[in-house]
Amino acid sequence: MRRIINSTYITLDGVIENPAWTSPYFDEEAMAFAGEQTDGADALLMGRRTYDGFAAAWPKMDESDPTTGAAYFNNVKKYVASTTLKDPEWKNTEVLQGDLIEEVTKLKAQDGKDILMYGYGVVTHALVKAGLVDEVRFWIHPVLQGGPSVSSPLSDAQATLALADTRVMKSGVIIASYRPVNR
Image (cartoon, rainbow, N blue to C red):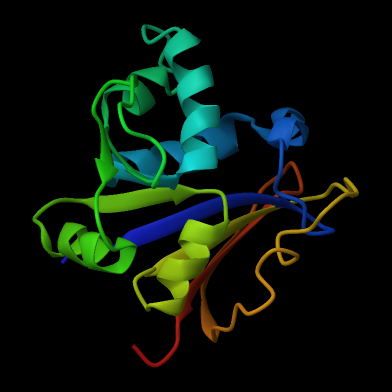
């Protein structure tokens, strides 16, 4: 069975929106870990907001430069959970039809590598509640950004997780990986 891995950049005060603040911290060490994640995944799963942001950015990046990640993101299979997106233009994108939990359960049952999710919003929240997310990786950045935090729209989010791994990078970024308890 495939695993769903959520990978989210977050500030010390819980902000995940508009992660331009990650740029100074995306060094060779961070690039190597990001490469490990994408090497282990043959699909992306995202909500509409993440899709819109990614689809606007990645196709404009140079796929011939391996440091951009554009070749991976533009060519990997992408699944979007959306009730409003009908005809996605970004290459290899499929809109999930029907019930989110049922559709993602089917995806996990298929042969393949991990399925990556970026950002932590309503889609991830629903999948965590349903027990479908296998690991959450928070890239904690030594930044106080201000603004709405990740928990504000997810007031009913409840899950118990166990620490699976930590990586402390020279830049000060800590990647804390957690897995659901009692699975």
